Image 1: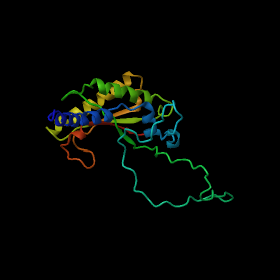
Image 2 (image 1 turned 180 degrees about the vertical axis):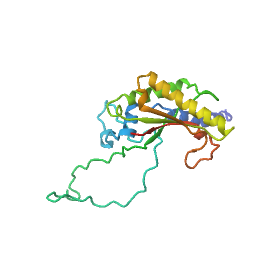
Image 3 (image 1 turned 30 degrees about the vertical axis):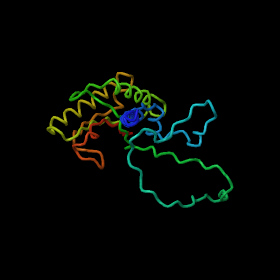
Image 4 (image 1 turned 135 degrees about the vertical axis):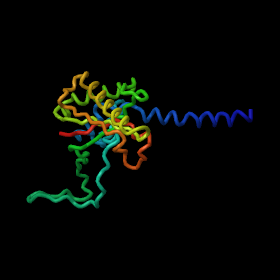
Length: 215
């Protein structure tokens, strides 16, 4: 009986990484992509829903976005002539700031491929379908995107450049097959030349496909 306690602790500890991974791999929704690329995000105040209602998503849920600008000290917003500023502590509602929706915004699509191949895994296909649905929504339907393929630096550069290009083209072809207009997508493969900030060029995190808003 004394050995049973340590064994339970060992098994519980081994299960923790798997649980964390499953949460990290939770698919995003089309609404998340709209929030990232169009700035059309649910208000955080609306997250306090009534019992039984579906909670709304936070603006930055599950995304790898471009780093925000440095935080500056808050200053009172200027008021136009003839307008009165809401008195401090008056309880007046202030509209929450939404993330900037501009050209150059990028999102890591978190797509995986079979080893050394441009073939999407089943999980990646499911994520790409969600992204395709977002691209067909009114908020994004007039935008154009660049699909970028990236690799780590393991192996020859020429091989990685070719692989990254083929993977980006594979993603674009998959989106086009789901109804996204071909002229809305550009494709580029950068191989190992653009590692993620703060990572070694050889790090596995650099094997990724990103979508970048270009118009």
